[in-house]
Image (cartoon, rainbow, N blue to C red; front, side, top):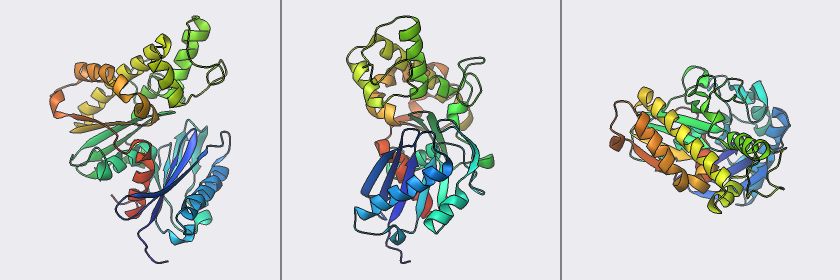
Length: 326
């Protein structure tokens, strides 16, 4: 297989699967997306990913066989050595591995890592974190992803568990998280967290909402970022309160992580930030500055993800091009 400079990157999320093909400069040449088949097992999702990759390839007149590097971002910690995944809370998967399944389907090595890691990597190489040395990233979507770059290297840690900022406990005995613990950052700042909080506000406390019943109701477990944003901008008091409270708790989480990593840049990204980042920023920054230890807040650059919703998939192409060694 000749090296034509193309790479395929897949972002597997709780609500959608997104594929991009990039050239050697990181430019996106084609993209394709499908809804995630909720309730499906790893093998079915892997098959869906293969078909989506074929769709993206066909858009630029090539076969999937013509693309050598393939990277996949998983919403779970991934051991970079074994390909074992611990717990994809938003997919309902525990202790699974896609490495052999992907190898069989694609006929080559597929490089996998956590979605927060790869989103941060994408921003470091091509996006808002260019020029910085040590970076932490937060990605607010269905869950809360994160990633760490230290002196230019992606830090995955023991068994690939570094950067799981969504499961850093920021309030002892706090809200229950999908991982089973209480007080995780993800239980306060993620779409799943927002839906739970809004249900309490609206269906238990009787607060009014502008969210349409066909998009949000007592049975809802998730919600699209665009629907949250629409209600927020329309002045929905419940949505504003829940989102801003989540942003404040994200500031607590970022300040705590900064005491460990001491970054010179923090990236805020993900679908929710894409839609509501400017509105969430004041509560985040106020909380971050108030809880930061030692560091001068002015020395920590806070940037919105430049690649937007593309960051994770583009990061997956970077990871694949480097064969997981970066």
